[in-house]
Image (cartoon, rainbow, N blue to C red):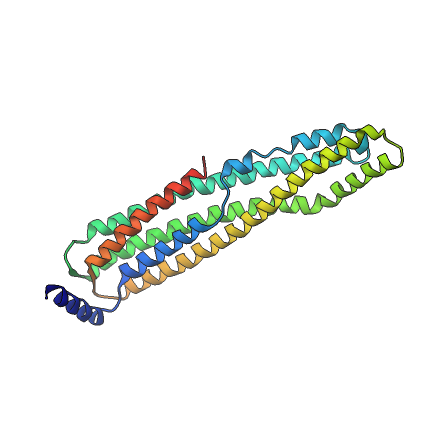
Length: 274
């Protein structure tokens, strides 16, 4: 009987004060960070551990690559340098991003502390102002998060531009080396250098394919954060325009669940920086 009465009271207040900000905020926040968690983003050390030095040295020292060897090896070392920048950018996304997760969680915990544990309560304009301030803090940290993501995206774009501009030189160098052997201008024993170079370059291009996927996922992440920012701004605007609204134990439960989920997602995100 009491359960039915509680349900009727909840329905009554739902229609009297239909705006359920905590429900909207909790669902939106959970969805956003679950979507980010599901994106395939490589650990920073995976990007930073790749070295193109071996293939660069092979090509530079081989007589078969006499015509283009120095140029190709220089370009490959440029790839490695830019790859290091990509790795550091990803590391920054994960390390600073995990702190942003923590900041968001702290704001949610402040909301929880501000609320009581009764079944249904009213929030006055003064209280609404407090939650509006919490939401505005989140908007600020989401903007910071987007800047980190965009920086990582740009670092991959810069590397891909170098690859696009130089790919023809590498292909010309391989053809020139093969012609050198075929025409008898180079000792056939250097064919092993060409085989090794092709094998190593295949690894290089596989890495670029991974980077392209990473760039695409960073782009998705930016869109997710942009939509979240817009939703938070909408919630903030609604809070600004009301004099009072209600919340329930269910809202508190959702906020606590959101806080717990964020802690879990933050740990997974932080591990990618190690």
